[in-house]
Length: 606
Image (cartoon, rainbow, N blue to C red; front, side, top):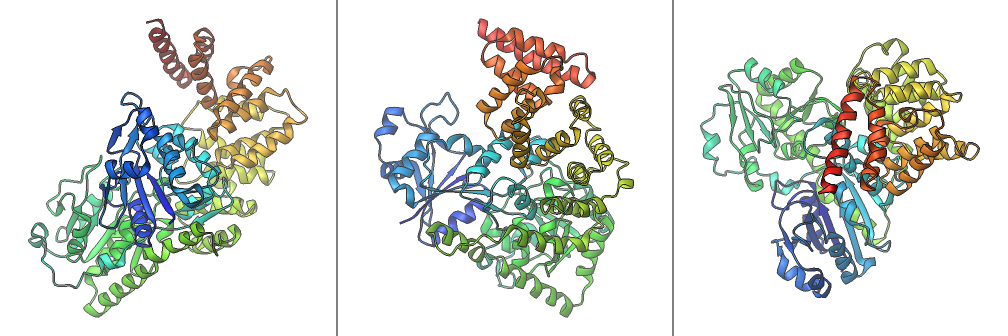
């Protein structure tokens, strides 16, 4: 029997997400499924006991088996003082017990990378990329660190297969692995075909005036509460009903907005049955560009028409409308509410028909072929990208879609199309939806260096921490090549950047700027020992160059942290102090670094 071990970032009994649905699918197909969340229940087993205890006893004693047969295993730790110490040994033990060739690890959260060192190359390793974790790190204050991004790149690079839930994630992962498979989110249609079944209406929604405009899910940082306020205030006779968890955002306090709290998964169809229209009022940004919300397919499956803000993967699905602005969002809701009965029923049938294409059984089935080693085909990258471009070009007046097209054109080396999409006259003002890194890369590739530099300076406008480094690259004799490497790095194309850097280094072995670039590239991949090696070489060979001309800010921070680990506080302090004179932003960063140095030194002295 094949064993599937799902390594998730969420507890099994939390709100059902993609990892739980995946576990259900494989259990129903007859696989042995073990689910471990990186957060949640844990138990400490002394190392000597963990070595002796067999896996069957582990599963019997430290897991619970769901009705579907999924083993939900606690995190087995060796120490209560060191977080997650013991997970490496646990995964190794599971693999060896079930025979490596029969084991598939499906990793659904990047930070599991820290615990995969002891698994062998004989098992299957699948990375399920289901969020733009870089945006979580940079745009949401959820406590995620830069190391998560490095963990993801390393994980994607070593995986036997990467599956991506969104087209933008597919593009991102294709820089790191040749085997990337697009697998969007879906729905168990059998759970939601109950809209017209005579079931008891939940009491807390039964007295709310209709029409009901419905949302389910977390009220988190990606939800556009300003849009919700606009809708509710514009249509006081509509009832806007929200169920789910409040994470960090508060809903507007308006009489026709109702928050009913968290509901069980099994209850969701009963609430949806009372809705006229379902909505996904997400903010329009890079984070949501990589989202294919589960709720979208669940809405459709319940025969409820959907209105959503623009998300690339949701474009053009029958039974739904995409709004490019607040007024259009409101108009789409009005259109559904005011449809005559026959027209509305036609829309509900379209919704149901669309959902049938996204049934989890259909979406997950190809993974069985991969796991079994039979007839699994990853579509050619060019085929997939060209098909995506064809969809997006109908919406290219929208800045978010322009951003997606930039990435895809550059992936296809169609840099001329990127330059035509964002013309030089457009590079005048900062636009948060435009990816100026890919704009600059296209202009460098098309030998339009002046426009590339203009785009880069727009990108760095909000931060002075990298402008000094950028200015030093522009002064280089081979500035075109240096800028190309830097832009490939910033766009996530680490391996192409490494190839170019290695070629240059073969004739310029002691070039400190190149060595500094290599430090940054290996740091991006989480290869810290190699990064430190090149950082040391760069320091040795830098001559008259200042530190901030050789390294970017992340490399400097890494270098200081390494010196702290080595207890070389004097050199770490010297580097931090040298940064104080650059500008105000660098001074603030230097103070932050000095605080780390002095705190570490103080604790070491104690």
